[in-house]
Image (cartoon, rainbow, N blue to C red; front, side):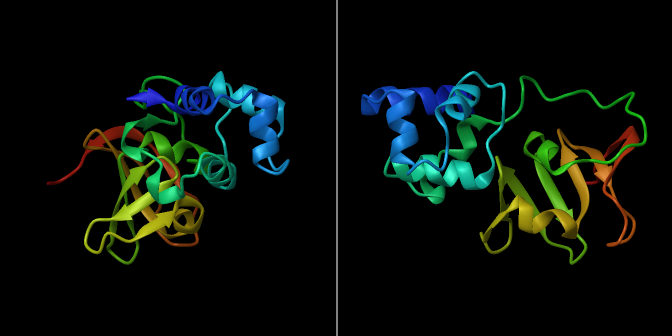
Length: 162
């Protein structure tokens, strides 16, 4: 597994482009400084930016190797001493899966969720407000009791029932 910035830099170099040329290939949608931030893993791109970059390389979102790209900033964070705080959308790529209020389970691959039953791919931005439980390494990271509540970090790591 490697980080998004490494994947981006590798594809850019294989194409023989500078960061400025890659910016131009995205029709100016992504600036050269933003590309630099992504390559240095100092910033995580939005799904729209990933789409623009993938298209510049001749890929689609479906052909991005989600299973080998880490969108986090290193190892997954320990959540043993987290205070009660909101679990943000940008934290979701660190998780392994989510369960929604309608009972569906989605495996997470970067900013895409793949529904286990049907294989349907959904962007996390479309999924976030339907999420009931967030899971990583067989432990619950965040929950919400009602669809109108905020998604909140759990105080203690809870095991997931298999």
